Image (cartoon, rainbow, N blue to C red; front, side, top):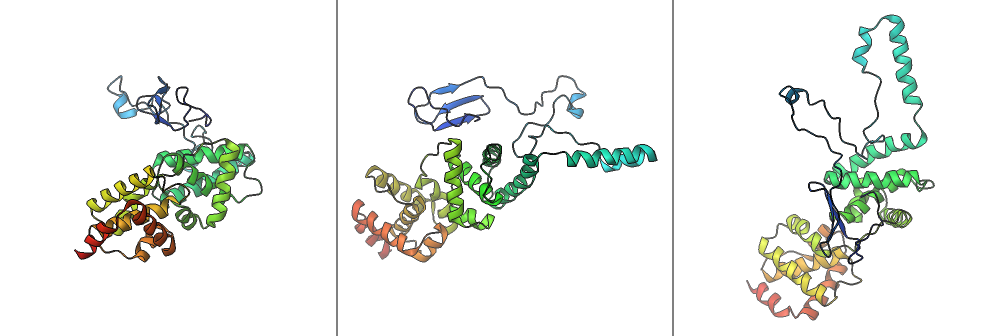
Length: 305
């Protein structure tokens, strides 16, 4: 959404969802349709005549922030066309192509490099196209407002991707962003907080449940163990045990407890490596869950299996 500070007029929430198929913006908290009948800027493939099925030339490619010119720019011919021209026109053609590449602004040159890096990192992390589009939009806004000055391009790209992941509830940790981009995770965190604050982007706190599916798949745990860990987290959230704790640590601990209950032996080291936290964190969250949720008996039964 272009306006990041938009709020729901009914409940005041900022957790809004853009449904592109229906052209609506819906509040996830109360279900109110904030906007409807929005214009779809995507490509139209409707066939009005039989020959359109082959040509498909009535519309161009959709606009996208993942290209520096949003996909609206044009390029002077292709190199194969040069050989169809005479000597005089060929030299003129090459000069025009050369000057077209030279007249780009500083912002455009920055975006060319940054968006290529953004695509590389997004591909490495296997992020969906919606997250990549959102990250490109955040980075473009940051460049236009001069927020990149004094910071490395790679750190702002990583911070934008992390913000987009958080907005779309796609669980990716700072450690994963750090590994993919080669930037220290503390630098990514600082840049992420700076960019979101300056652009007024509202980010909801991470939900530990969002990490369960990925961690469970990496640890090769059964669906029953995964479902049980979600129930444990829901009980923990009801008792406010997740407040002030890192979402990855509490999610990993819940999976560890659930694995013990179902007799699936996983070491704290294995769980910690998958979640990107320390064994001490797993151990502390594990003890809290056992004590506060009275799970000692269930764990003992699981160990006997």
